[in-house]
Amino acid sequence: MNDQNPIQWFPGHMTKTRRLMEKNIGLVDLVTELADARIPYSSRNPEVPRLTHGKPRILLLNKCDAADEAATRLWLAHYKAEGTLCLATDCRSGKGLGQYQQLVRSVLAEKIGRLRAKGMGGRAIRVMVVGIPNTGKSSFINRMAGGKRAKVEDRPGVTRGKQWVSLADGIDLLDMPGVLWPKFDDQTVAEHLAFTGAIKDDVLDIETLAVRLLDSLARHYPDLLAARYGVEAEGAHPGELLEAIGRKRGMLISGGEVNTERAAIMLLDEFRGGRIGRITLERPGEMEARMEEPDGSLRI
Image (cartoon, rainbow, N blue to C red; front, side, top):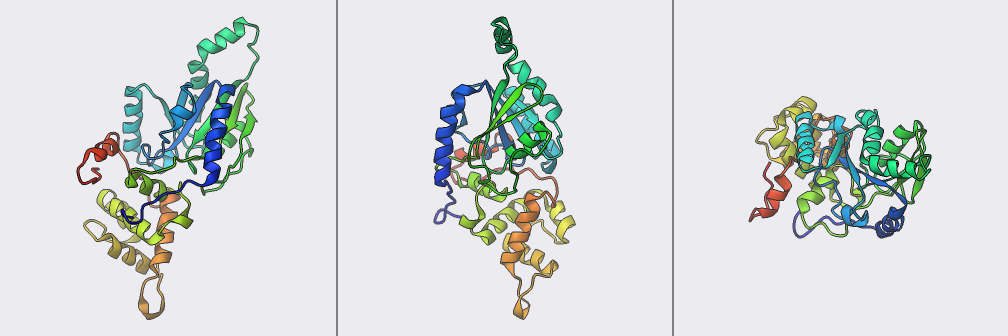
């Protein structure tokens, strides 16, 4: 990806989602925002505070089982220091969600007390669930509801309308479709979103995207690449690395050349599925620091 071919993706239904959030925010007591623990900075929509009108918020760093544990601890400490209520979760397995309902009631303790004083103690707590595409909102709702209530697929744009789901303990969840923001000013943010599947693959150059991912992984997780694909990753050119991985996997076409498109698709699928290993592409403070670098380079 480069300045001539920037990544941008903001389909029309996302404009409708922004309006839907603003229209319904008055109905809820609290907002739960899901982010991807592998890219905690890039996967947070900067418009959420405005769209949710300052409602109390709980942040879930989801897919933590696919993220680097040490990096997740850094992010949890970072958010605690800035006063953000944050849990590391994996909504498919339920990891970390045992604390969620207690945290909701703790955040809303004062409001719950006022409702009880008015004789409205039986009213359900209403929570809006928001996040960018593919962060696991539907998996979160299904896990909390104890069954399959919301459609779940590993691709962006599956949930298209609002859905209310009632939990057994007096909490109602309002599921919002995934929504990005209209323009990515930082293309590293856009790339990270594309790596994790938050942006529709149809609008991307998959081979270039895979090469960019390999560039990052070879610098920061060469041992994982070596273990998964049997290649010497450290110091390797990412384009040559993609070819080497494709050759190792037998992805050849006539003349013995590597089918790099097939290799790219495989690499991205395995990264997104956590099969390469536990990986986090961002650390606290890095992305903000990058914006200050004269050459726009990412310091990791």
